[in-house]
Length: 404
View 1 (cartoon, rainbow, N blue to C red):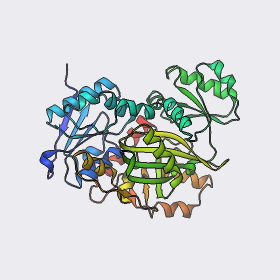
View 2: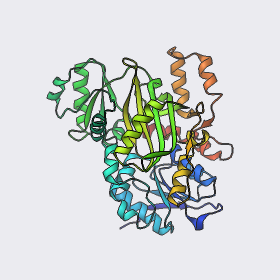
View 3: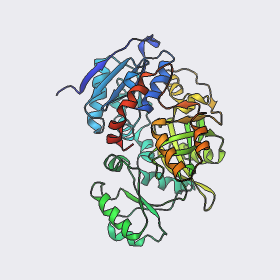
View 4: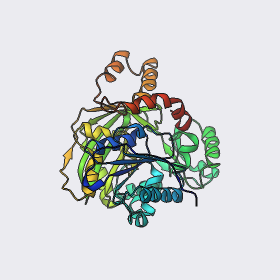
């Protein structure tokens, strides 16, 4: 079999723990945040990616490997094991940054654990986050509020949905929808549009995986998050957040401006869910505030690092480091994020902000203040500037690959 490794780069940094480090699967800004978290403390970092990667240009990355395919489960496992053996990354800690990688690591945890430390939870746990049919079923059993949701099998089943429009069509399993549409969900403003969109989506999403959901009114500002390093039924590190802006503005696929806040009500629901599935590791749970009844409703569970996880380090909770320390047997000190710390992704927030100003959802001065007083930018760093230079050059490529 041909080797899945295309290229390897190995800058030199001081090493700790006899070379034990982190293996980051996915080298976009999320992976870059993990690399910086570990690298600043002298831990070596290997980034594996199947796309053009900004993280490879970070001064904190000691190895970079380009592989053919990280979307196919078996190819991912083969490639990661091959890289580990070639580069002698025995006992290094795996950090997946994409949902399909989480699923692959979870289902193949036993074989991966022969070479790596695998903090990804087992499939008996991950299945409750991977498939929203499981997520919402468990949430209902636990009494956790969710938006009204239907799971039609056929077009004929749409006639049984007794709800006012607009509604949204979204996948139970993200990868079968997002990579094709470059969108998180589709909006339908009429029954005719719902039928048309359902038929379109059914052409590339497996039968039974499409959901119809009530669209909770409001924009990105209705979105909230619970983030944690969770272990043995409790949060060792915790942060609650307000997702003030997302890209695109409606049905945003990724956060573009987020602030840490204090919101105990979603913590209670999130921790109840995580205890029920015996969760271990890093996690983000998304909620949406429904202005019609004032309740926060669970939308999604991400069993991995999330796009804005670097906000935690700025607010006093370095999630990536906490997981690393726990995996190597160190005593991890509990931490809670300070409220009022902000994170921005300028590459996507700027177009969102301009649209909000033009649409009069925000004043020019309010938006200008937000982009001049933030605490941390997703990519730019004076200590590690090259990734931001590369990202600027890659914007056309990113727009083509991901739709932003």
